Image 1 (cartoon, rainbow, N blue to C red):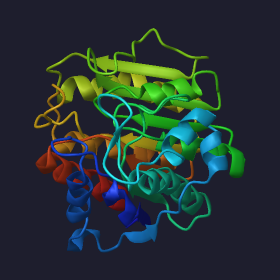
Image 2 (cartoon, rainbow, N blue to C red):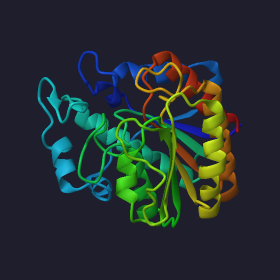
Image 3 (spheres, one colour):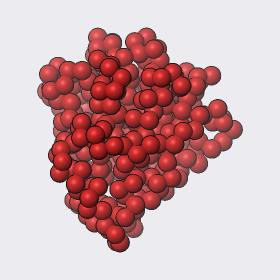
Length: 309
């Protein structure tokens, strides 16, 4: 059984998005509940450190930091756009969510764990260099990738994103940075409207859009035929995963037809990739997933493979 870290923080439950918002504290509660059984006793639970301003500045403009860190509401809710909300607890939650990926990267690079899963919210992959958006305040996986490059002298970091929505923010941040390969499998058309096959960056962007109604066969083919060859050629020294579970057939915000087994399958493929190229080093962080039933099943499948793979 692999040494796998579970990196989280209670502050991530304090990010209040208001009644009826799909990105609710119940999501993280469901994830933690799913990982609380006997099967997951071997997880090494570590506390997420808060991201520093220096870590955040590597991927975000000053305006984003000011928006999230310096204008936190004392009471009530503050709406950044139609989908993105802040409460008094959001500032600390956002710092811990981004900091979790840095904490986990430090752990796997130091050999304290082989792999890690960051159970955090708010999610991150829609936040661009200059804007918090799409439920996301800071781009957690991007902060972690930039930290790996700056602090651990890595030269090639891959970010694999299987959230049903395209990670426009991660793509934006690394568009011109050949040290990072960003690869996404997502539904199209769907929010945020980006992620076509024609978007290549400097040769480091790989998009595999799937039509509404696509299921296991199309998803697995897209990974094996489009994403995996690019990852193999890139030979990453660290694999980061934007782990959204909203392509599941039960999810209310999208129209793909995946099952928990598909997430176990792609996780196994990514573990194998990390073993071949990255000394086994893989860090996954929670993105979307809005059916609590599906979220519990899929997270258990994903983390189960991280432990057993």
